[in-house]
View 1 (spheres, rainbow, N blue to C red):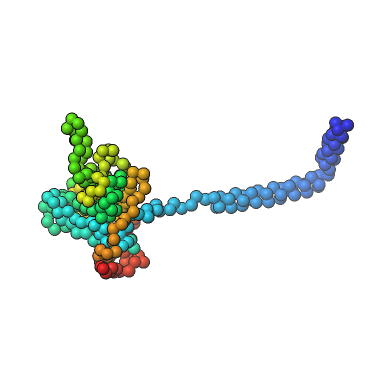
View 2 (cartoon, rainbow, N blue to C red):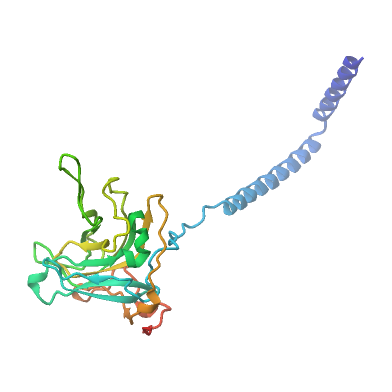
Length: 312
């Protein structure tokens, strides 16, 4: 019975199809016109929908990397124990906390008045136990830091031409990591009292550059920062270079063996210094304007021209 009803329905539908096909030309034209309009409307609607969806699902603009909550940002105008070393081979250095485009940084300026000291190495030492607590020194694994470099003088090429470029920015993050050396049963040294992690950057087109450097976990299990050692430190060095380039340290972060940042306990507010305004302008060859992607001069930023933080 169901089969008969199904066949009857199919026949009825077929009849309707034949009747429609046999209609007049005018009806066909009208139907065609209506169909075209409908298709046009549908097409437009689909296009609008597609555009709307594309606008809705467009990839967002990339965001700046988040700064770790335990990073030393120098927003509190303190050196955070940083000092310039003066041992043999160390370049004469002036340290400042500067406001560069509204952001405080530790500026390292090498005094180049004595041309014989061009190729000496600026060495900046941080006292780690004061920064994180002596009980945390044995948890130190690695570091990350942001560098800014600004050309302050000409780099002279082999042909005698002058360039305003950062050039090579090479150096290391190192430190004394143990209070004593450890030897195995055969007398071989297995624990050094020094480690270093080299960075290597360069740019020969721009007078201002920014770089981020994060060391890997470079230390052997037996070659780690000594626990409860008041003498462990971090030293940031830049190899000597023939052109004058100021470099800036920011967002210095210390990590433990689990990759977590270690909180800073140093009382920076009790050791504040005056903030120096830095215009961010690099050296200009022949009065040429700074490169388009160079750092914006500080006077154009929203930061005040001079910021002073009184020491307590």
